[in-house]
Image (cartoon, rainbow, N blue to C red; front, side):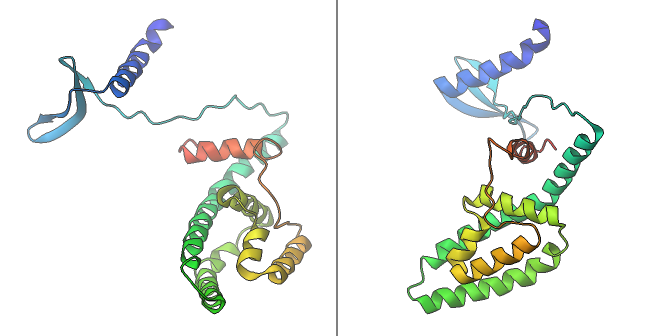
Length: 203
């Protein structure tokens, strides 16, 4: 068992020493004009600089029934469909917030928000209306996780309290809640683990 892990552990140790202590010079091994591998010269020794991809590790999940396992697989499928939209929403909100800060009058803000809303609806509405109810609920939670604010808060800040209240009422009719928050350590703990695995390319 020790021999099995010796080589990767040794490589990690060498890389750590290189990063901590620094090097006298950094170079590359070149063969026939091609760069093969970045290296660091340390005390006369040539050490490879290898970027090891971070791996997320969680305890093995045990399912009490086939139904529970199917729900788990369904959550993974929904996450893969919805997560890109949540990331995009995060970026769009960040861009909008930055631009809104440059506007001086309330009219400029309203015109910009209305224009942005029309562009977003034209681009994404045909895709979003195809989401299932469970995928829509998941998206609401992911927006809170990614943006740090609920969908209701986003609507209230951009469109005002009345539109936010209206869409919250509509969402309630369909069994959703725009005020849903992402609970990392509570009911959304398993979902959060799946998101971390997805972000690391492990799903």
